[in-house]
Image (cartoon, rainbow, N blue to C red):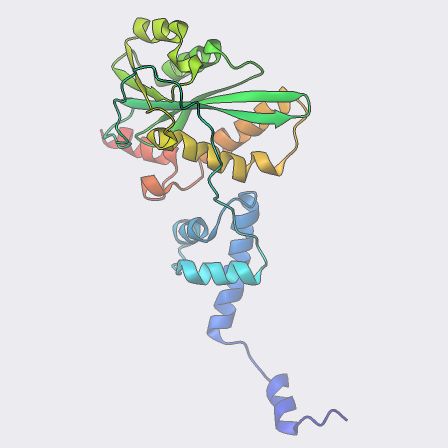
Length: 268
């Protein structure tokens, strides 16, 4: 009826999958597991890294990408968000980092920034402090108010968590919360040296900007928030449960920030 050759019919009936096809099925299953375990945050590059480190499977990024595409897994957007700065702000404050975002041990340079997070009750504000050595978020605060106390409380958390006193460069943009007399007094008391980005130049604080970009694309933009507590819960889950402990970071040769620091302290 279908005018199919007898040989074609039996060839199809007795067909056995090739070795490559069997491998692809196995890898595809692991890719789907990694993708879901990490709440759909990983693209091809980080998925390839996890396949090699956790499952001992060495494959190219291109092959992982093709298999992810065949599974119809959407890739993560990495479009840099637009940031507006007040270019008329002309206070003369020194930039001590000069875009040198690499240190040879922890607690030499910390960078910080604030971002807005929308809720149905209004905006809330997240301040983070990141150690440039490992890109670890060492302190963060979510608040309904954006003022100097937000910076100071987050700095106090960083000092407590790192158990350090002084001789630290603290880099930020030139927001009024960072340049205030209140923040200056706190830093002077703790022997912390302040450093500031150039006027209207977000690239001078690229590490903090980059963190916020991925936080928003991998967590915040996927949800709708009604209040401050929901934002606090989401930020805690992302930073403590994923970013610091699990997320491979290209700057750390694909090690998560916690792993890089643990290796440093275990060998020092």
